[in-house]
View 1 (cartoon, rainbow, N blue to C red):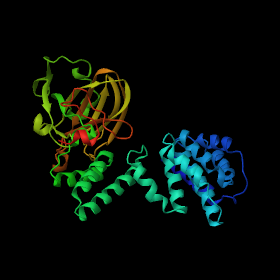
View 2 (cartoon, one colour; view 1 turned 30 degrees about the vertical axis):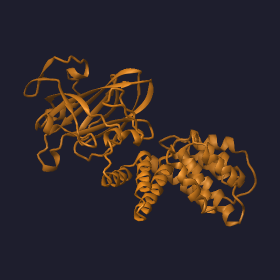
View 3 (cartoon, helix red, strand yellow; view 1 turned 60 degrees about the vertical axis):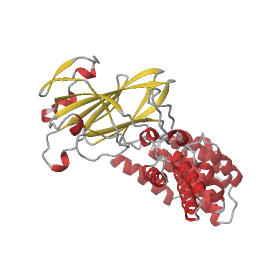
View 4 (tube, one colour; view 1 turned 90 degrees about the vertical axis):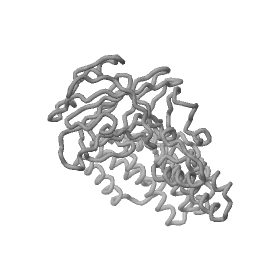
Length: 389
């Protein structure tokens, strides 16, 4: 933490000590040096020196510096963003023209890093405020979640204005578009409520990609939290008819279909209330192609998640909080059948706030767009027109 703080402080110090901007310089080697900053601040001194030189680049070189975000880690991006802002701010104050055509072209290329495109967008709008209204509507499907969020907010405002004008057909269409594009929970809830008020039901579990059909087994022993490190039989094999010695007798697999809109499985209700206990949840997932995915878990209890036997995330944390996408594991689906296994561990705390034993899990791409199993009831995608019923 201290090293990270010092690294960030180095960026700030470099900004404060920045020289005046000037002529064109050779950007590529300076960017490469900055990209070498490690997660613990390795290479920070060299990056600071490179930044001081890079900050003198000509305003016409902004797109080249922005492109450096593509292969940069978080600390390096901080340096590069500081350079971009220093160059652009100085040029703007002196009345120099920013290379708007080049910045617009950079923004339009969705292969660039989201933070770089966001920086380009902010400077375009800063010098040409009218551009915001022109650009935002086209960003409903943008891979930059920050830009997409602004587009969804714009669409929600448009929908409300149409509703206030009593143009219900157009308002409903706008709310549909906002719902389809939304990836943030607050915006999804707003669009969902507006559609529900119009008699339209949204399949929220499918929109998010929450797993609803589970096989559960337990409870196994977690006295003194010792079970987190124990590999009980479900971690090594799946025998549908098997019985194993559990915490309070033999246990076997049971099917459960969750109906909660956010896929939240309450194990106290489904399995029964147990303290110092572990339940395993197993789901089969049929993929039409091999592809990378995020397996995102919300769980207030200690947990582990495997995909096809590969451990994606392990978190020995009890009753801190729970939220959608709390833990993100990056994995890869194979074509055909895949198996997701979750270990949910309850401890023995007696406080009222420590009694929850719950989890929710969804499969999506890196942008939060649902990836659905091919055997999910009815053919579904994350597109709203196929989710409404």
